[in-house]
Structures are given as C-alpha cells and as structure tokens.
Length: 222
Image 1: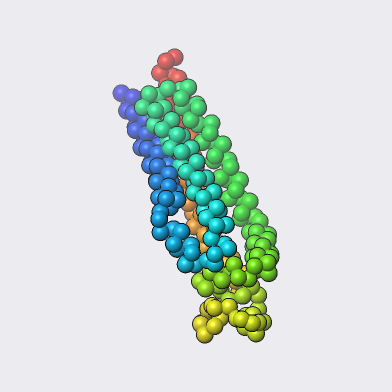
Image 2: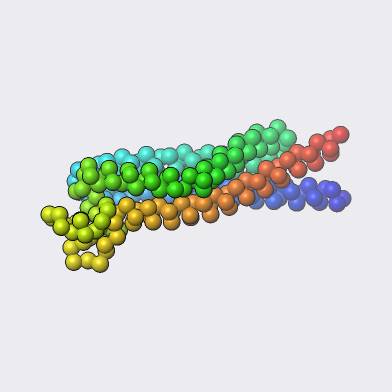
C-alpha cells in the first residue's frame, strides 16, 4: 500500500511539473506571436529609429520571435511527453522524455558555467561591438542615445562634436554608451541566470522523479 501511494505521488508530482512546462511553452508561443502580429510594434519602431534602421530591426525581431516560437513548441512537446509518461507510467515514454531533458540540462549547465567564467571576456567583446556599431552608423545609434547614454566613450569628447547627440543636448543623461549598454546587458544576464537556475532545478527534479518512477514500474512487473 505504501509503495503504491509513493508511486502515485511521484506520478502526480511529475504530471504537475510537466503541465507547468506545457504552460510555459504555450506562453512563449503566445507572447512571441502576439509581439510579431502586434500592429503597434512597427509604429513604435518608426518613432524610435530612423527610416534606414526600421527594416533591419524588424527583420531581427522577426527572427527572434520565430526562434522563441520554436523553443515554445519544443518545450510544450517535452512537457506533453512527460505528462503522458507520468499518467501511463510507461517506461518507454519516460525514457524518451528523460533523454532530451537531460541533454537540455547539460546544455543549460554548460551555458551558465561559460557565462560565469567568461564574463569579463563577454564584456570586452560586447563593448568592442558597440564601438564598431557607433563608429559605423552614429545616426543609427540615436534611439539608443535617446534612452540610455551619451556617445560611446568619453562624454566630454562627445559633447564637442557637431551636432551633439540628443541625449547630451541639455539632458542629464551623460553615461557613455559602452558602459550604459553593458549595464543593461549585465542586468539581463543576471535575470537570465536566475531563470536558468530555476529551470535547471526543475529539470533535475523531473529527471530524478522520472528515473525513480521507471525503477518503481520495473520492479512492479518483476
């Protein structure tokens, strides 16, 4: 009786966990498609960027949106597979479920370690890329300067050029773009790191419960 109750508890917990994965996948799909088909998006782009950069930004956003849709579909399929495996306690289905989840766990762990170890290198490469973009198309950086910063490097050098950036023209925003954009990215990396840790914990729990359930089912049939 106790063994049956433990098996039922495992199945219910695993089902709820994978139901959560399904909902996350559907949420990713819904938000990505909503952003892609939102009529106000192009208006906001035109308001923030100059005409030459609108099309480029739209193409970049389209790629990101469809990538997130693909991720959402994949997460939903994995969650659905886990739900079916938990309900049926089928070792074959649970095996097909554990393998991709374990691979994702290793990839996520590797990405987290890489970002943590190479943070200084990422910062250096990012600031070099920002400097190149700023030197290549200062007009295209107008929207960035308007929101976050004032020129790429030393603000005093930026202020003497003609014409000065709008963000420097009578405004208190005087942070160099290289530093300001890295601060934004660093904050995003921190949030992403927290999300990654939560995801890794959930995947580890799902893998553990699936393996225990497989072991329990195997011994029930012995």
